Amino acid sequence: MARGVVAMEEGLADSASGRRSVAVLARGFDILRAFQPGGGALGNQELSHATGIPKATVSRLTHTLAELGYLRHLKAEGKYELTEAILALGYAVLSNIVVRQVAHDPMMELALQHEVSVGLASRDRLNLIFVDVCRSRLLSTLHLEVGSRVPMPTTAVGRAFLAGVPDDERTFYFERFEERFGRDDWAELRPLVEDGIAQVHDRGFCYVEDEWLKGMRAVATPLVATDRSAVMSMMCGAPAFRVDRDKLENELGPRLSHLCSGLAPSLR
Image (cartoon, rainbow, N blue to C red; front, side):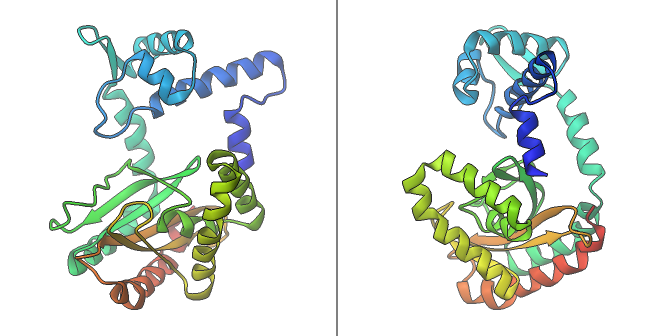
């Protein structure tokens, strides 16, 4: 599964023209993905820096995406922003995620009852992207929204996802992490990732504190389809002053694991 996605992103196809077409398509998506929630408009130079695509190519892509209605050119600023047309694509995806619809009410109940954030996430390359987030109004310091991306190897929700995928796919991700972080940094990070995976296998969830965000604690568990054809993950977390480790590990972690076991038949 992961290999197929990355192969497409790298522009692999059966012919030279096919390779070029796929590469252009992948770069167009890279441009759209560079816009972050709350990040505002971006110019061609900023997009080039964010994506690694040459500025001249970025200029052609942004012009085309604007003509297609997915970007809006702010002439006064010389920048681009996403248009509402993107919402149609996103809404179509969210509305068709059956497990999201089934999970929302119990996630909200858990969030309000314990004053925590509860999020359901899916893979986005080497990150996790949240497709639903429920939280207490008291949590103003954990800024997770639908569409927020978090790194896979340094978060509880990411490590839970890695625990849920097949061994060969996990090996593939580990190879990509080494490329991204470098051999030495990955050598330090890998034991922490493996410990999180071992926690999931041992007790159904993993615990992470102070890695992705200082002062934040979270537990997470994989959500694996009954036929193992799909994997997502769910997290529950809050600032350290809001929830203690004992509650997360002895109450919320097991409850989260139980919830995801019940949701498995809804994932496809």
